[in-house]
Length: 247
Image (cartoon, rainbow, N blue to C red):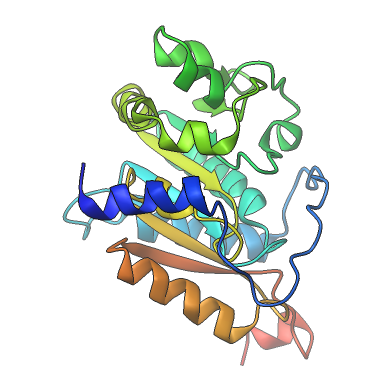
């Protein structure tokens, strides 16, 4: 175990959170997104999937990718879910989405699946890792929900079995996408990032402050974590979108 990883684990145990700029908002209740996305959003998701996962120019395709919002409410869970669906639709391989947002899990609600068994159980119990994954509507898309066991997030994040379970998922599935809590509030993403091939940052348009996003980027680079890309969520247009894209 590297010194950097040991330091991150100690930070999770002792602090649990990064000091946010200003008082943190109350956790928002998860909302199931609309079943369909508009054509422009779908196109942008496809571009992200091609660039990060399917580009022939990639020397090595990332197997495990972490999604983390810069700030609370930036939409990391929704983006992770949508990218997972898009990737599953573009490849014959298996795709597994993991809800590692141990603070405020919502992916089971987005996919209307049970949350009785999931990541917490996979870490705390033994057995084949696929036993803790649920197949979505008979497709090549699978979901490991957060789970319902009582261990607090610190216990899960500090467990050596978390890394072994993520490696087992990578051996079982072709692509593993992991959702995590916001970077500005918790250290979780820095621990999870050590167990993945890179991170995709999610930034909320017209909401996330530039200095907060820049600080998150600097923190990731200081921890030697690879940033694969970023997503600008809920972008709005000062002029009609159909005209904007013709300019």
